[in-house]
Image: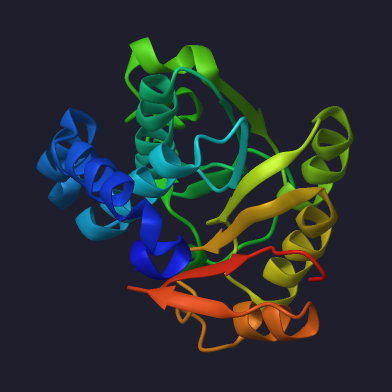
Length: 228
């Protein structure tokens, strides 16, 4: 997949980034817990994501949807190794109360159980992120469609965006439209579980903006290039 996203001249850099990511202690730790928790990226998607961050060396990464923080942890590990960059994460957490009922952080927020990944408590959002990787992390709690318009004007640019919040067509499309003007030339728009709801939000968006959507294990990718 990565070979198709970068020039052939970068093949040695790609192989090095993949080797470093395959050897990631963060990914190994996440995989050891995978059977205990829901909503965790697969090993190969984490390797793809970590390798991409190592190759791009982005200054600003924005993601929507955190839950346990598997993607956040892998992004932050790569940013730390790069020696630069900040991850801004937006999450609207849902946790299970002592009565066994699912409760959202935002009062009045309506959701379906199958649409959310739950955490044990509010302070458990992103608990998979090691403490020594949190200096380059800014976590915002709230609805992404409310918080993105507040966050984006404060950022100089966005080099990579990862959607992993509500996988509904309208919600995804609204996130994409908000982020696209802020995405740098050569930047990436990623979306996880793109076929979960059996719609075409990613390819439809790419077609409207003159881009080409790619898919790797349900991880959708659109690269922003000049004139798109």
